[in-house]
Amino acid sequence: MLSKEEILHIATLARIGVTEKDVEKYQHDLSEILDYFKKLEEVDVEDVEPIGHITGMLNTFRTDKHEDFGLIGKEAIMKNVPEIKDGCIKVKSVL
Amino acid sequence: MIRDLHQKLINKEITSVELTEQYFSVIEEKDKEIGAYLTLTKELAMQQARFVDEKISKGEEIDLLAGIPCAIKDNLCVDGYRTTAGSKILDNYIAPYDATVIKRLKESAAVILGKTNMDEFAMGSSTENSAYQITRNPVDTSRVPGGSSGGSIAAVAAGEAVWSLGTDTGGSIRQPASLCGVVGLKPTYGRVSRSGAIAMASSLDQIGPVATSVEDVAIILSRISGQDPMDATTARSGDKKYEDYLTGDITGSIIGVPKEYVESLEGEIKEVFEKSLEKFKSLGAKIETISLPNAQYALPTYYIIMTSEVSSNLARFDGIKYGLKVNDLSESVSELNPNENSNAIPRTLLETYLDTRKIGFGDEVKRRIMLGTYALSSGYYDAYYVKAQKVRALIRKDFEEAFKKVDFIYSPTTPEVAFKIGEKTSDPLKMYLGDIYTVTANMAGVPAISFPIGFQTVEDKDLPIGGQIMGKWFDEEGVLNVAHTYEINK
Image (tube, rainbow over all chains, first blue to last red):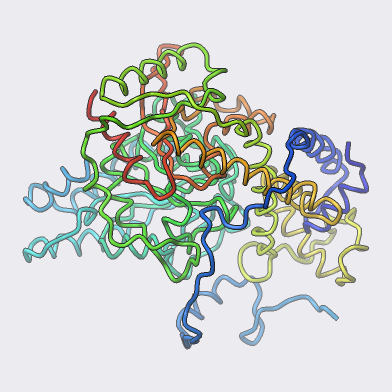
């Protein structure tokens, strides 16, 4: 079973706020599913390369040319921003 | 059905405006009970319908999909309309552009009726995880339609749309298609552009069509597939018209049945499945038992890879750029979360992230983000994620070996028929186990279709059973032709 500290650590990494009740629930739910994942321990994967791309597609190239879309879509994109100040996206102070 | 409606449109037996209004009145009448739609796009629909009618009246040629009403899963962006992915965190999100598939449908002048309900961010197998509403199975409204594309599938099954688009990460098109008695296709990974689809697990996600016949599914696939500069994982596929490959002849085709899949079958599903094998034989196909030795590991492997990709993809929902923002609560709901590992982010900013995501995401989404974060976290990455990607390579190898001997792989789509609403919500692991036959196609990247093969009678209701044909990479035409041949020989 995952400890309370482990759950809090993961929750903060995942940026998900938790209450005491959540922690207990995650301890139970996550542990049960992680136990189920243990089934993979029995598989021998010696010398097996992990999958990179499933249909084996290799490099996809495009011309090294930038496209200037100007202001197209700017208004529509900015409409979705929760907080704007002076035309910029507002974020809580970082420093 | 699409061809018939197309004929009626060009013969001027009905206009697209009339047809579209008919569908809106069916929605009006039925959707209170079914709950397939989250948003109706009436203005866009009527505008497209009038455009098509004008073309017809001028005698111009129109595409097969032109003027025909369809429904779109709410994780696909339609420019100017609300796109929620079934989540409260995107409650007020207005898509600023069209997904590539939508752009292509608009070029065909298809009529988009609305956006359909789904499990939040496509995480679920019953559409009960939507933050907005449940969707009911039109065959028996006390039961779930399956998920996560439950709204798209129920809309088609209830006659609230001619066809629809869904997305499929581990079975989210095929499982509900099976449970509601319609046809649904998950294309080969890379066949259809994912640009403008709200990402769940990027190495597994594919967009695919849902309809009442295999031919309709083929017609739709022809219009949405193909290479796209906006999605570097799309494959070149030219201008293939999949509907032209439906010969109705599968003489000599070899269909493999994985013994690992059918060993545990029982009851009426087993009977119906065995009857369908006889039918395939009578149509000239050869049935062979095959083995996919690593199939037993597909589900845990899937859940590690999927949750890992989910935790990464959903990091973008941070309350800053779009969607819900929970800020300046008088008391943060996240006081328990320690600050130590967050690289000294100021507490106020960290709390915006924590509170927004705690309140904006539902239980299942948070559970999967937590699992994926754990699997990718320092010290566990090799044991979970890398290991899973290696097992995935073994699963793909099983398919490569199998396809040396057989042309197609056949099984039921799901281990059981539609279950009751609320029956499995309290046990996430039990819900996951229903994906057992469908996840392997996503793991291996192969195309797979679900189509109706019979019924199981429960409480006087005939609940649909689906069969699933998987094919070789990029052999959509083969997969479609097998299902089509089965379907036309009733």
